[in-house]
Picture (cartoon, rainbow, N blue to C red):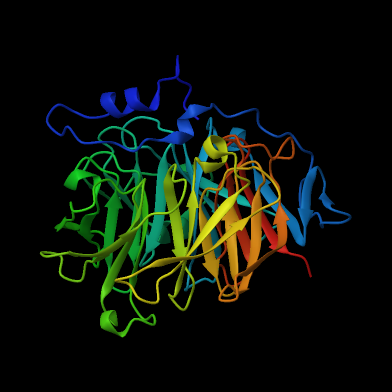
Length: 415
């Protein structure tokens, strides 16, 4: 992470992060409470199977090590978010990884020869927080860096890199907001939602990206205050009242909010829900049938003493959401970003690495860990080190893992 000369309390950060003109609450950024530990040093150079609970120095179960690129290779001090892109023309697969000083692009098609193609530098200054999503062969990148805006990068340019690593420039930079904590894209509508900005009381800032190189503002939503992260879907779930509507599900620090954002000029609150012992409502994701929503609270492990806790909400009636189940892991690591693919939940679990949970019987309140890969072998304690995010959506089965301390990992389920 960015090295601060001293650590500020969360309340002080909230005050100092807001301009006099905006006077808006910023993200509490609980991540900042601890600086990252040292980078993990290993000697792995290629495919290493998970055998007897280990892949080289990394504890594992059911997932093999394919490759890694270190922070030194990226010329960066820390890592953060990650996403992926498959080039439909060439079939190649690429990892996109956020760094303190920019965004790295890596060709992972040949896992015996990962190719660091280059970096898009941060638009203004370094920051520990960067977020990236992909739509129509373009990457959309935001950061907590002051005045950063949204960078738009045409990923097809990666086909033409002949002397890596290259230093890229953005194709477009949208400046309707400055800093943002996350960006969410509904690929079905071509709308991006920047959250945690200093616009719209920190709520979602709507941007039309149907033409990726010509983004334009569509307004925003102020009704529920600051949003830390979100998912937006064109709704196909069990509540027939909202079929075909565009639904925003926000993790809003102290509650989960549901908003109908189909009409950008008149977004409408649907409902909100809290839960017992809220500390910091952080991020969540729908099951594929859009009935259940799996949520992580980023500070409940440190402040309440829970083991890793995943809350499962039943959203079969969007007007009346209810808590369905609570899953507790066997360790105290902090949960961060989690994504659903089929009947599995891939959870970036900081010091406990990536944890894979079987959710096929989520209706029966049965969630079972079936595998993991731990990129931070030193400990599973509740601290802000290790895995920030995971991208499990490549057709090849490769999984991209971004580690704060140790860079980019590529893993895959053992055969």
